[in-house]
Length: 317
Ligand SMILES: [Zn+2]
Image (cartoon, rainbow, N blue to C red; front, side):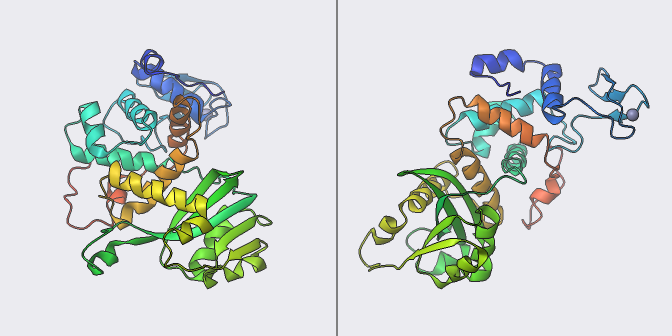
């Protein structure tokens, strides 16, 4: 069942009430029907407040418990609007934009919602890339120009894998890594690419161990890097992804992405990029609600645990 709205009008018709949103969530969370986690019975009924009650043992389950919506003080219909807005826009949403469109009183709530949704954008246990894949690293964040060297500490190293699809780019994967050593790069390849695939990199020694891991490693030694565009010609797909990623971070997020949150922005970029050819944006909506219903909750404190000096009192999100 891939039942999703194909337009804003359809979205509004379908998800106008709290009940319709809950019902959709229940169907995505238990696609084969609700089964009581305590006694295994398949018969249940719903209370007015939306709790599922097992007909055999009366055990009660909130469809929101154990999802990213757990503990929310806002209507599910508002969350659905947020998800629609985030997925229906090609370049995604900023916290300020989301705050405006939902009429949220607090910027922090909008920020936290986006971060919760980003945590649902990468499906655990997803399949690995296969075929022929370009892999390379790049520095992201901080100041791109000026202040030579001073801002370098804010930059993060990101390793990117881009699948070849003829002359085009297939699917991508990316990850922030502490450095460009083999200890950082080889495990990334092992996690995201099927053994037996062709992995195309530059001549960097950090990739030398790939053959032993069962990959066909094609290393193209760098030519003269003082020639502008030399690297881009070497691994064109991965560098196209890099420039789109940087443009997105600078555009939608105006470069305001701190290194400790970068991983989640990379997940969002990957989620969008890998679905960029979907005919209907509603399909992204469907996928994100489905994944939001099946990933663990991310309480506010866990979102900001790396951020010092923030006021932690306001966590009713
Ligand atoms: Zn039961």
